[in-house]
Image (cartoon, rainbow, N blue to C red; front, side):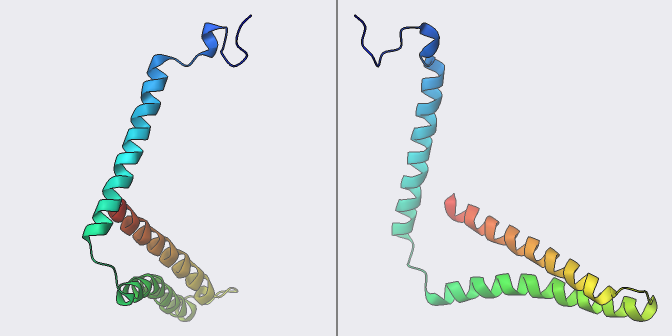
Length: 115
């Protein structure tokens, strides 16, 4: 009689290459976590001011394109009057652009910390 948890068919067993790939990924994940932990122990604890600085940087990266969009929209309203408001459209465009810029900046900072 065969054991219930052991696959009987050879096709059900993982290939040796697949097992090694999984092992390599596991070792790489463990190595990255250990490096991150050691770096955190070496570096000083970040102060509240670092958090305020990052908050301010994200805020400015959203605010500048938004205000620029409003300014461009007001100029377009005066130069090219239309049924719709250029100012509101450019406000939305500037806000979306600012959010994308802020998201990319935060992602980049996160990647730098993970390395």
